[in-house]
Length: 423
Image (cartoon, rainbow, N blue to C red; front, side, top):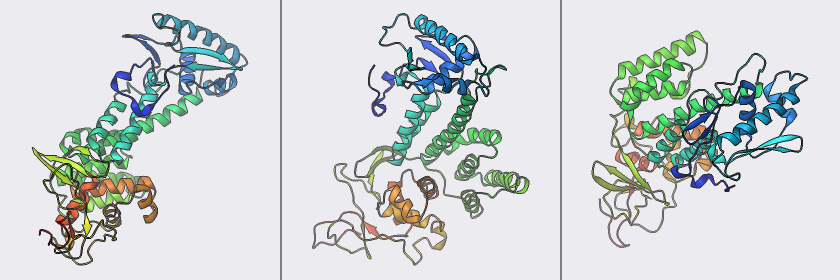
C-alpha cells in the first residue's frame, strides 16, 4: 500500500472507493455497491472509521448495539464473511494489493485500505489544508479547499444505518459529531468568501442557513456583516433583532460580543462598501501580492505601492514622516493615542485594537493569543472580524489600512542612510 502523505494530495490522487458521508457504499469505477443490510453497513462504517487499525470484536459489538445480544459475535462473523465477498466482487478487476481487504487479526478485524480512498479521510485532510492556508493569508486557495471538502458530502453521515434490531450507538455518536463538524466547516468557508469580498454571492445561502440553524450565531453574524457590506442595513438590523428575540428573550441566552458589535457598526452607519480583492500569492516573508482590477501591488503592513515584485516592502515604525531607515524594525508598534486623520469615529472597536497591534508587530497567532489571554480560536475569529471591519482581504493589508486611516505612522523601505525618505 502506498504511504499516506496528506500534504501532497492532488485531484489526480483522489479515487474514492468507500463513501461514509451520506449512504454507506463501496465505489468501483462508476458503479456503487451498497452493503446488504444495516448491520453489514454499520460493520463496514465502524471499520472504515478506524481504517488500517485493528478493532476488537467486542468493540465492534459495543459500537453496533446498545445492549449487544448473545449472538453478537456470531452475527459479526457472518457479516464479515459477506463483506469479504462483496469486496472481492466489487473490486474483482483490481490487484489484491490495490483493493480494500478485510483481515482477521488477533480476535478482531482490520480494514486494510488506501486512506485517500475514503471520503471521510479526504474531508478531514482538505479541511486541515483549508485552515492552514487561511492562517497563511491565502484565502483563495483556502476557500477552494473548503469547497472540495464540502463537495464530498451527499447527505448526513451514515444516513442509511438504522434498524430496530441495531441501535448503533457508536455510529450515531460519530454521525452527530460529523454533522456539527460539517456546519462548522461551512461557517469557515463562508468566512473565507466574505474576506474575499463575495458578500453578495453568499447572502441567499446565509439566509437559508440562518433559517435552518437559527441558534448558530456565526451564520447570523456572517449574514449581518454581508448585508451591511451591501448597504442593506435595514435587513441586517432585522437579522440581529430576530436573533436577539430568539436567543435572549425566548431562550434566556447571552448574545456573543461579536454579534453585538456587528449590530453597533450597522447602527453607526454601517461598514464601508464591499470591495473585492483577490490574493494571488503570499510570500514566505508574509508579503501579499494583490490585484485590484489589473493593477499589481505589494503590501506588507505599510502603504500599498506598485513595486518590484522581487523586493518586499518592510514596515518601519516611525515617529515622523522624515525618519531615516537604520535597519530592521524592532520597535513596538502601537496605535496612536491621539485621534488619527479620520478622527475617533474611525478607530477600531476597543476589543479589536490589541488584535491589530499584535498583527502590526508580526506576532504569530499562538504568541498573540497568549499575550492577549485569548484562545487561538477566539484570536483567529477576532482577526477575521478585524479584516471585515477594515474591508481588507488579508491580515497583511491590515497595517496598510491602519496607516491610511491615520492610526499609525509607518513608511516603506527608504533610500540609503543620509537621504530623506519620500513623503
